[in-house]
Image (tube, rainbow, N blue to C red; front, side, top):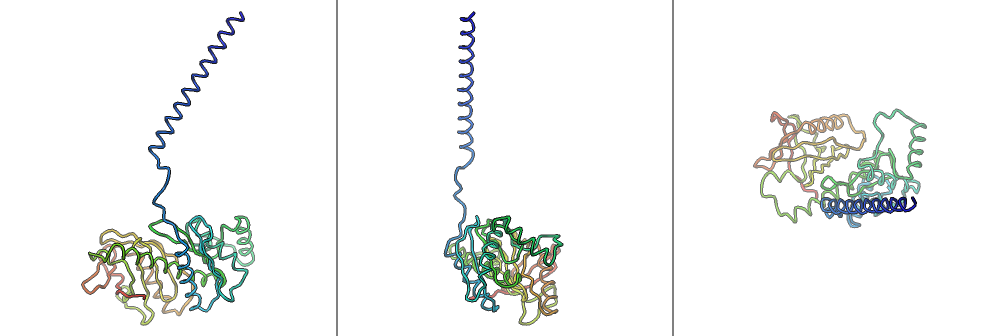
Length: 313
């Protein structure tokens, strides 16, 4: 009897060992197969450098000086880690943490900071909610304006956060920093690729709007339009800075929803701003004539906007 049980036990042990060996071999084969199918390292990831971060801060600081505000300016990488920081003379120490939090929030959430849609809180309740949210997140989330992601080829490579003034002013300073680095990247791409060889490519660059839906524009208050090679869009309505993305293919161009600062201005300029942004949202096609004027049309080829080239330097 004991010999029979011993034999069964030996056979069971052998069977279990065989299963383990088969399972190990199968797992190894699956792992090897997965290694062949999936890359282990991404080599095409762009990184924001210290020089790039400093360029953003320098442009934002110039904008703040022009506006007469003293700002704390932070730039982080795509993971929300601090790359560079500047505190202008006279900037409030209490806004240092705020600026960094805005930058981290914009980078990690992949969108500009600002009030949440449908938020009905106000006054003291809103301030308390924002304070609690920032504290609970460990400084990684805020709904205060002034944080904007830096986007290259549809990839967030970093973000800027500005604190020290009103939310609208902080956002305007941040947008100026974004516009500067976007333009620098566009110029670098053009210097490598050489001058455009077709009219199709000349849509990239800086434009000043000379007509909106056949009604002209307010003199000395013309909106601007800057289109980068990666599709990034920014500009000035003459009251507010705006920024977003465009999709370009052949003679087709579509502008996505634009983010913008929220400063108030004279009624005539506010009306012009609304007309401009509304027209921009309806554009589906473009054409550049022999005078280098940019014509933006809707789907029926009705001209919505007309612009001429301008140089920012």
